[in-house]
Image (cartoon, protein in one colour):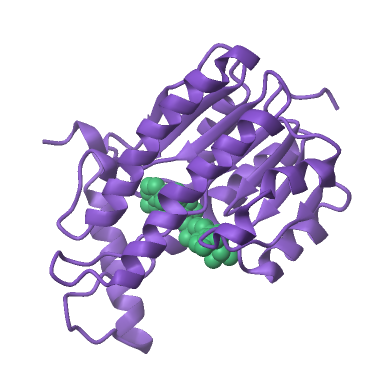
Length: 261
Ligand SMILES: NC(=O)c1ccc[n+]([C@@H]2O[C@H](COP(=O)([O-])OP(=O)(O)OC[C@H]3O[C@@H](n4cnc5c(N)ncnc54)[C@H](OP(=O)(O)O)[C@@H]3O)[C@@H](O)[C@H]2O)c1
């Protein structure tokens, strides 16, 4: 098989065990790349490694822990014998209205959505091979927040600004940093019921009904009339990883959501 462009050959994918991250992993592997998959749930990562023997190394890591995430890129490079790409797809969204934002949810969202990707990006500047690429997952909620997304929106907006700084810092070694900004995509992240303050989570059939109503309402917000699919976002991520003359940019893949008033 022909080798993909630099940035797509030996890649660390955080959040690679599910959703958009998993779709990125599969797209890279289909193109002949090799991948280190990371996330907290080791069994998910092992399942990916078993499905693609010889092409995947699983490195479990809690990115909210500074000591666990330190040196993750170096470990990925050692595991693959080199590293030319980083995709940060790990993310956490906790919907809470101001006045009801728990300290735990605030800290976890800032660590996983902002601090960890900036630290990984910083490490990538010295670990990635020249000409390599990094891609961060941002969100339409960064520029078009909800009343319940204060911390998530702030973290994703900060990540976008940090990505641009990394793009400048890496340019001397032809390292590229970019972002993909999805609308609402049908993954585990949006299959959690968004509860009003004090509301008890529904169970059984009521829970299923609530989630399917939530998905339908979210899909209808998009001018293109439906939720996104993880594979559609992954395609944009892989494109940017290997795009040799694109850096500091954000590619919006949102079914037209940001066009709405
Ligand atoms: N789905 C959407 O509508 C949407 C829209 C805009 C942006 N995004 C962004 O897209 C990215 C991917 O999300 P998704 O939709 O694919 O959701 P997902 O399936 O829930 O994926 C999130 C991933 O993050 C990992 N993760 C969470 N906390 C972690 C931690 N402390 N340490 C390490 N890994 C952690 C999870 O793995 P473990 O639980 O195993 O750790 C999981 O694989 C996220 O950055 C998200 O903010 C999603």
